[in-house]
Image (cartoon, rainbow, N blue to C red; front, top):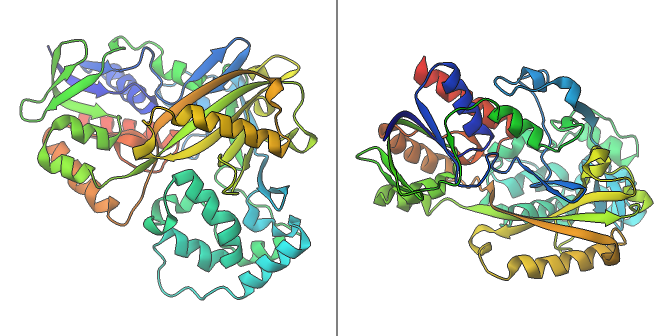
Length: 434
């Protein structure tokens, strides 16, 4: 069979692309390897608990509200605007995030160490490209070593010395000296960060977004994985045993995996130089109340390297409908090098370590855990290494020549949010159909 448009992957960018194509009358087919569409923007229901694949909160810049997202069929009345309540676990206590603007909340000795280090920080010489250098020059060695470097290395599961700052800069609180010094004096100056407010469904989890984007689509095949791509013939083979030819393919599957499917030596060699981290999100249904310090926390960053997870979050502090009264729906995220994720014992071993750490912290007791769901995210954070930009340009050039136009966070191998992923799909469709 043949289609003018083949959408490869049914995450939010693939769904948005399919919606735009359907509206324009395009002859399309969307293939999704899983039993349901949604990709990582899905919600699992276990008994009375709802767990997203991990913490997915909608930050909007282009669109004023969820109802304004094209083709998403959303109603603003089904969403809450939430003011972020996030913290760092530092110095044995919870400190308001971003920690670099609230250092006066640290124990005195630790605060003084950080302030002295900030005063003695090296002068930035020229344009700073490295992630680690950006942190040290902007916030001082103590803040870097104690909090910001370990936090981000745990998240990215790689040394920051490998990474560039460019792509993540808009997501990272900037080294604003006025705000940093005010924070040391416990006179924090609050201004809007990209995630200081966000949208979240009143009930049903982030799957509400996925269901809206999937609504009315007429040409979707689930449980059908692309297992081979013939660039010359512009044809894919699938796990269902069929071949599908395309004029234009819009893949949102991870760029590295896409290149391997082509068996093209040039693309495979380039893809081998791309790297990423994986995340295992452990979701727990917990009986009873959380400790007082966590009673309103949406999420907590955990830079301590002796604690296995980099973030703890509570869905039910954001949306009480995520569980029954008297319970909490929580999650913790553990970063894993991408090459390690398929070790057969890694999730079970980490789960034991995670629960032990939660008990030691006094945040969750093992006897209060009534259900557990582990979500394995094989491609979580792509690594913006110095060579990444040129590699991606070269890969996209070769793919575009074969009518393949990647979209979304992972298709474009980028560090972006949900809104950006949707927008990239819509922009690509518009450019190709206009």
